[in-house]
Structures are given as C-alpha cells and as structure tokens.
Picture 1 (spheres, one colour):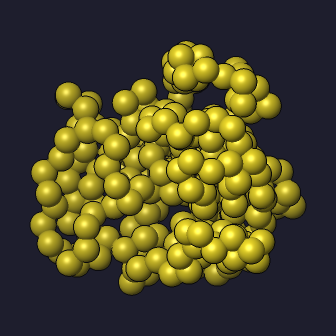
Picture 2 (picture 1 turned 45 degrees about the vertical axis):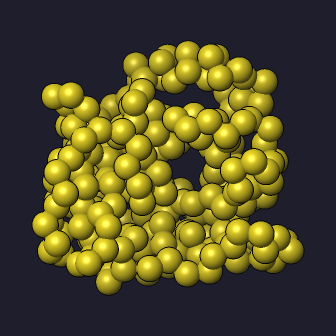
Length: 234
C-alpha cells in the first residue's frame, strides 16, 4: 500500500489507481471491541491554497467528555480534485494522529466513508492507513441517491449507489439539512449510525467533528490566517 510520503508526487491517475488498490482492503464489519475513547478530526484549508490546519479532539465515550487534542500545520501541493481530497488531507491528519499519546478506539472524520464513488472517502482512507475503526460524517452528499428524510429528529433515509447501500442521510436536527453518515473501516453500517446518533447533542454536527472544526479554526487564527476561519458549527 502506498505511503503518505509519496502523495505529493502522484498524478490524478496514479491517485485513482492507489484508491483502487486500497479499496481491496476495506473491512466493513461489526466492531466487537468496546469503545471508551473516540476521536473527532477535521481539516481547515482553502481549495487552492497549500497550507492546511488539521486537528483531532479526543473524548470519553459514550459520555463525550473532552480529554485531549492535538493539531498539525501542513503544506500540500496535491491539487483540489473532488473524489481525491484524501490525498490532500490525510497526510496532515496523520501528522496530528502521530502526536497523540493515547490513540482512540474509533475515529469520526468530517468527510465520507464508503459513500464515495470509489468507496474511498476520507474516513476510509484514514482508517486503512492507521488501522483504526473509522466513520465518515459529512455535511454534504458526494455520491449516491436517497429520499429526503422526514423533518423529524433522527429521521433517516438510506443512500444508494445503484443497489448498494453506501450510507444514510440522517436528520440530526429538525429544520436542518441532513448529514451523511457512512462506515469508513472496521465498523458496520448500523454501528456507524448508532454511534453518530449518540454523538448528536443538540447541534446538526456530531460533537467530535463539531469540536474538531472549532479547534482547527482556532489553530488557524493562532497562526494568523483569517481567510476562511469559522469559529462555530451549528
């Protein structure tokens, strides 16, 4: 499997080939180990800029008490290409991951898991490289079709790519657009949905990625970059 250090030199065609190779190793199965620490990850970066701000926030689970956080500032030259964003973002997240003294039992990432044309969203890519169970919780749909869920708390509708269920559109908060949940690696669909539901605490976005979002934007401001920092997530 290709190492992150090689990513900067990849062409888009080589990145797609890398995803095709990695896809063979995806494991969507029931996680039968207890979860006591959960991590949330996010990246702050402008589409056509090189500097990235990555952050991971750790929580006890299921209580969701913050117990740690770490960040990384990274530069990338890999271009912004929808469907291949992991090649821009994963190296920065790995830098933050490697700084963690305690590794979580499961990660939630602000992005897709298998709800991706190649089944290789950010959460799947990261989960494969770190061998950690991972879930994607995205604010927008990338791939697949679904029926709009009812405007009720925790109403949901499965996301399909042809006849395959690749995720779920979840109404995490009434009168808000749904979020899109999909397993990344080493966790199954229903567990992914149940874990995300337990991480919803009054906001549209689950607490792990909501806090990670706020954290990376604080890091961005601390480094003097105010170009796209947003310090709250509803």
